[in-house]
Length: 149
Image 1 (cartoon, rainbow, N blue to C red):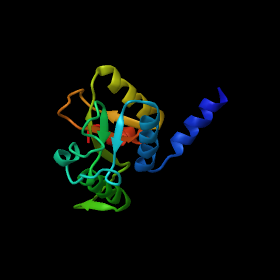
Image 2: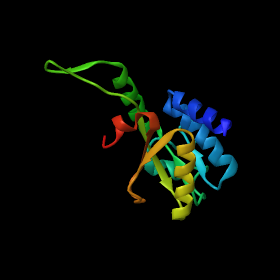
Image 3: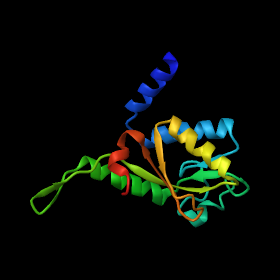
Image 4: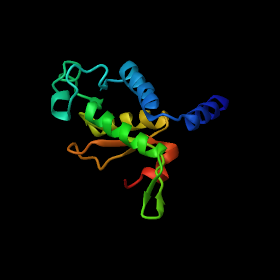
């Protein structure tokens, strides 16, 4: 029981989505049939179309990854969170970051496993269960800020 409490506390202190995602990707690669990819380990990573042709992902029946464009979008959101913006005289507030993940899975059960492992690492997934839509993920502690963005 104590280990679970320590783990939850550690997850709630995580401040960076990419580091939490990296740990989740490590677990997926080590213990499941999911293949993962980032701009750092994919040969073709400029966009979603090219990324799926990368040798690391092309024969994988279950894969989840993000490309350079997704990472640039994340970096822009991260930057916006650190700056204050004003619309007229009203300040605009941003909290939390999010990134979109390209995916392909062979079954509903495989997706439940993926989403469960992301959740164990403090990551919330927004998705409508359509294979045409990317997964939107963010740190669970920012769920009230990112939902519907």
